[in-house]
Length: 191
Image 1: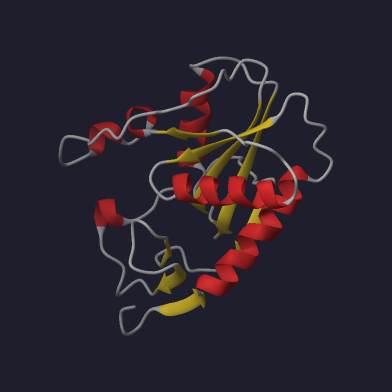
Image 2 (image 1 turned 180 degrees about the horizontal axis):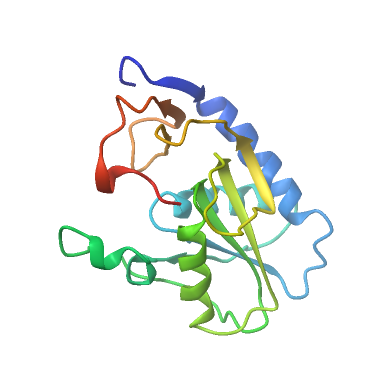
């Protein structure tokens, strides 16, 4: 962790947040259609996998997990300084009629969520789409509201709230970086 970052959650607290999020996702789930998880690349994918593991602890069998790459659905794609890197959408189930939960690490402006919904709906027509985020930091630019939230963080618009998760990062943690430490430009999350 950099010297002036503020630690908001460590590995143990994140595990507790994920367990509570899973409980809220599956409370009242009838199982028909079964709940399917779609993680937004990159850190939404391991988060979705962790939610599926927690669902198994709650007695739900074989929760399907997919991944969506929203790169080509971004509304700022033409402003990119370099060619975008595509990581691929992998959804191993039919989205038609499915009860989907889009999973992301941080919700900020709502633009990533809008892009994820567009990408998923290009593949079919789900019966329902919900949004689960580990962190809601406010600052919405679109009328997007999460259905399940792990942690609500109040941050200045110029600050960066970052979720670090294994296997992408060395540790599981949520940090807030004051504006003077946050990297400029493309490194900022527009979720």
